Length: 351
Image (cartoon, rainbow, N blue to C red; front, side, top):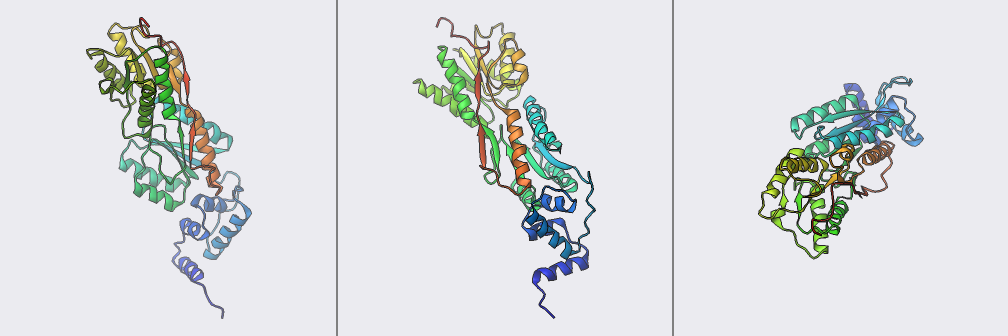
C-alpha cells in the first residue's frame, strides 16, 4: 500500500466530517476564495492551470460542484462607503457602475457609517453573497476586519479621496497636494495676500495634502501661513458656513477663501450672502472637487476638479484584474487634478 500524504489525510478527514470549505480549498490551491467560487460555478474567467489545480483539490476533497449553467451566479463587487450622503459618492458610484456594467458585474453598495458593528454586519453579508471583490471608499479599515478579508481571499482596492491608504492594499487617489497648490496660486495671481483656508479633518490624508499645497504656494510667494486664517471643517456645507463666519469676524478678514471641498465652499458663499457680501467682489472663493452642481451655483464656482468617476473606473479595473489573480501595475495610483476657473474669483479690490 502506498504512503498517504498529510494533505490527502486531511482531505479524507474533511470528507469524513463533511466540513470541507471553499476557504480551505482556496488556501491549499494558493488562490482567492472568489477564484475557487468561479471554478465551482463553471465560470470561464479562470486560467486553465489554476482551474486544473482547483478541480483536483475539489475532486480529492469530494466537494460536489454545481453543474455549469448560464447565470448560475452573477459576478458581484462590493462598493463600501463610510457615508453615502455626500454628492461625490454619487460620482464614484457612477464611475464604478459604468465599468462594472460593461464587464457584466453587479455592484452592491453599502455604507458602514464608521461603526464597527455595521462593518461586521457588512462582512457577514459579504461572506453570504460570495462577492468577487471589494472597493472601499473613505473607510479606515480596522486591522481585525482587514485580516478577516485577507483570510477570505477577497481582492480589495481602496479609493481614498478622503481617507488614508492602507499600506498593503492597492489604492486609487488624486493629486491633492498639487490641487491645493493650484487653488492657492490662482488666488495669489489675482493679487490676494490674505487667503483664508477652511480645512478638512486633519486625520485624513487628503486634508493634510491640500493644506500642504496651500502652505507651499504661500511660501513660494514669500508668505507664511497665518494660523488665524485657517479654520477647521469637515467637508460639509455647515462647516463651510461656520468657518466663513469665523473668518469674517476677524479684525482683518481675508480677501479670498480656499475651501478644501465644494460643499464647504457653497456653505461659505451662503454665509457671505447672509452678510450682504458679494462673491467675488467682496471675497473670492475657490472649492475642491468640481461636483456637477457647482457650475450652476451663484456665481459658478472656481474649483479644483478631482476625477471622482475616473477613480471609480480605475478601482473596478484594478479589482477585476486581481480576481484573475493578476497583480496591479502599481500599488498606488494618483490621478491628476485640474484647476477650473469660473466666476467666483477676481482680482483683489484695488489691485
